[in-house]
Length: 447
Image (cartoon, rainbow, N blue to C red; front, side, top):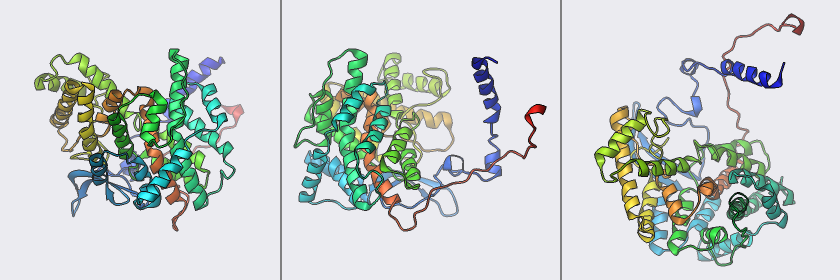
């Protein structure tokens, strides 16, 4: 039998072997995707790190949509962000300190922490050379391999004591921007024939500023402050999001930090998780080209109706950036990002595009409610604006998802540290119900 035909035959048999009837899930009371019938997540753990609020439970059953809230260590992210925006300063380091330690730092502690982060940003020479040699066209894969490479240079890589976990956390948070910037510059050099730049991180700069400096050198203050806000808003989102849960599941086995974080990167890479902002950006460009009058409600509604009916665009029946697993009336991250996005659009001369995006947001929500008519309340999520913001700053799509990882590494480390240190810890091991009946084994001679 030809090997090519065997692969085809196995793939055809896989079609039947992987088929599971949907009606079996309620029959056996299986929470598919770890979600309840009302769409809420199945409670599988406790945490003191982040809290995502999008609805209230109604006594006797049901959910009541409410404006979304996001809390870091019980502090409202809106309060944190508004304070930082008002003071026109950088706050990602402060949020990292809060999520790692459980409390807000004073001025001296924050200054020392920022200095420690800056000290740890440079990469080992072998890691830099490895990034150059790896090349590759997906920076998330390069990031994952670089994290696993860090295991080699860590003399206490398998030590899960608190001191060592905190040291590893700070080093990972510090090195992610450098790895991503170097990986993109290598990708740009290898695939587009551009000059290769390896800029070293600078003292006294924030993580957001250093990343932009290493990536493209030229940036405005508003570019850096907007990126800083994006990092803050994506640093943590509770223990139930796919990549953070992946880190907690992997960490519960007692494995090393680098293996657990690499697993989280693999999860975030998926288009249903960290890659959503790219889909929104692509959709926005498509709508810019296919809607003639950017101010016409009727034309936009008609096109969104055709999208939901799977007639145009990619015929998926989706409007990307609309809806969220938890948030209902609003995603607080989207509202906060929108504030600086408006200022950035004014600086970049993109006010017409921003107004178009705002109208698309309004009409997408209205059209979704009219067409689906399922009683579900939806809003835009952070992805609806993040891709547009990245492009205004001058960041390419290849680093959209790595930037998400650059922010979320803070939450991953905080959750890993919690998973390994609370008293009731045990290996995370859910169950699957087998729906096949027993079959007698047939000797190979009789098959």
